Length: 96
Length: 240
Image (cartoon, rainbow over all chains, first blue to last red; front, side, top):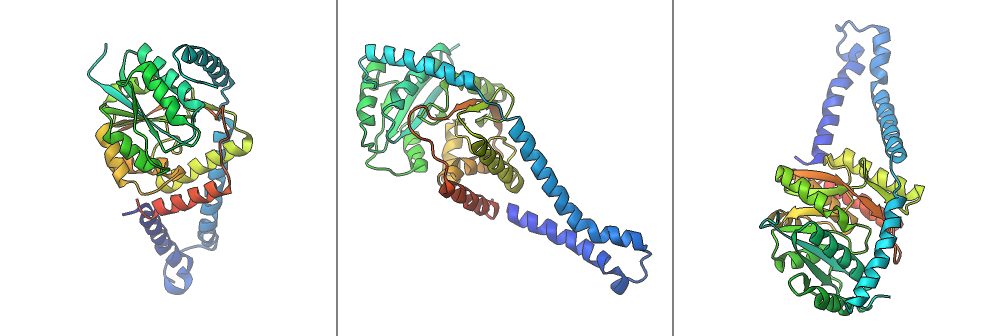
């Protein structure tokens, strides 16, 4: 099963559970669901989307914030390039 | 202790006349200091700038047992360059890295140590964990990289923090298997290798690396690369 199939299956399962609950007054009138719970059920998909979006933004933001710069690696590389050039010329390798 | 293990470094090059001698010098230094058996396989795709001539000088300086030249007739792509390199390698482990010095050979002993610790199939360098980092990237470039990795993480869940990096150590047969299973090219190629490695249940370890953006020449990340990456991501999402 590919990742895409897994994702589709999850969506399908979710809506298979959610849709009857959302339309319960017409198709499942015997269910004792109060009006306030009704509003909660109606809001679940939007709530999930907003939560996922918030999580994504927070996750990327945090990752960006903790992304380290390494100027010291650049400095030491430049020094090594110079040492390498000197040594390579002595070994008969042409370097610019 | 110098064991029986031998490490073959695959360096696909195209117009790397400036970088090749220095990366080679750094590699020789790293392997010699760590007392590891090695060979550097230069796969030059007929660079017009004379990369191959410099490679020949390096071969004279460091010996044919350490510098192996496997030039090809033209620019034939990264995947086939690795296949070509593997076929001519004598090591039981393969290092893959960029020849432009954005990947520093000083991390090689760390890769080797990590690999031995768990007899791992793949060890991959990561810029994102503690001890890793980048130099020469502006905020836009960092954001692009983070979003790209986040998207891949959500869609493919590979369990590797740096998917688009390409400084890695593989067991030779593992790399050969992964390449034959991998279909994509460019940026996506490195990512697919990790996704496939997870799919085949290979053991994967990570070591922090620093990434210094090309000192000589330009590194490119334009709209074309981004679109290509997204397409590749969707392809993998529906394929793996």
